[in-house]
Length: 486
Image (cartoon, rainbow, N blue to C red; front, side, top):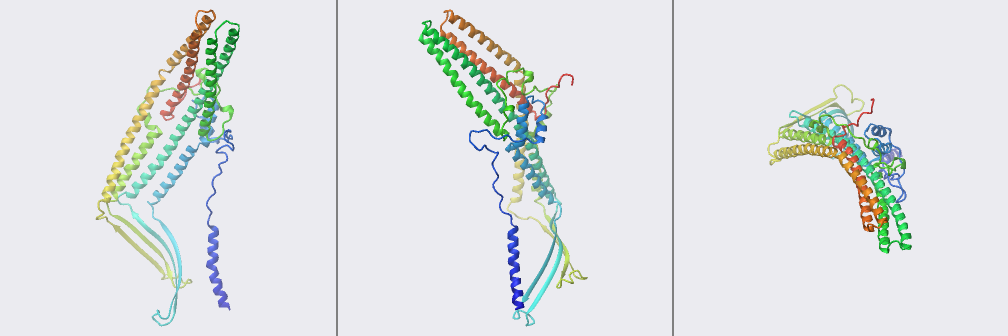
């Protein structure tokens, strides 16, 4: 009976261990909660989330950002933008990958303990009797450590390091691009709000003019044609108000998507944001050094990314060449072995093994040599990409500087165009009232004034975007002018 109970207990032990291990297995993680990613109701604004203190400090260091609402929007984006989160996660992945590759330069030491018990039947035993044997062992082993005589492992480690640095530079590039994109979207919203305000003011003035013309026509002072022409201008302005209202809503949605969370109305631009003094514009005018050396462009994140990629592929060439030479690896172990657990640590029970191995590729159909050729071709491609990145950076900076030199003249000229059209509109109305000209002259002057005002808003937006573009193409290295007395 005792033997039966013992056998039952022994049979239950493996089952209990299996259940215990099964209980320790982690279940798949639940899907992330998207609450806060999108609003609960379509068409409603997202909830405003808190920005991290680090992101707020980073945005505050962007001294060229003068509008507090724009600075707060940038801080929100640096906290909640999903593209930036992906870039940060890529850094962690590259850091872990570099740690894995770097570990290959050191030997792997592992400890193992083992116990075994076996029974040989009488028919198979040399003594003609059943034999039960027991064996215990404990070992400390170095498993297959490669002696890096030709630098293969070292160069693979260098390649992994360059990929890690590349991910860091990419994260900086994503940050700079994100700041610029948020600013562009914010300025686009400001411009369309100014256009909407202009369209509303135009609609109000045209409605008043239409009401006046309608009364004059009822008194017989003008024709029905003039009234119909006046009605056309009113409905055109009403259509512009509707179109710009929709565009403002779309601009806000685009800004929310970049920021990654809701927007406080206090952060948003107003219709007068781009109409104020240029000195208090949302983006300050950056100070340029007396001379701009081309070497500054080498510090741009995208250029550094190309440089790190070139260095990583160059290291891969060296690693591929090293693979042509013999590979020497060592496997060693020291330990103890005994048939009895009590005497496992007794004298004379030590064990050891030393297994050097050399592998020399003799014939592989040219695969190793082809691998070298592929690595060299990849390096040559990276050289061309690096040179192109520098050329692209130089062209972008040159384009931004070329536009910067002409902005003041363009804005002054467009303001003069607006003033001249406003005067022409006043004179045409006076001439129509006195009966000298027909109403078509008034309509042409009215349309010209409206188009000139719209063009001025667009130029102001583009001038601000040029300031941001110059900061971006210089890799975020420019600063605004110092305050007086500083």
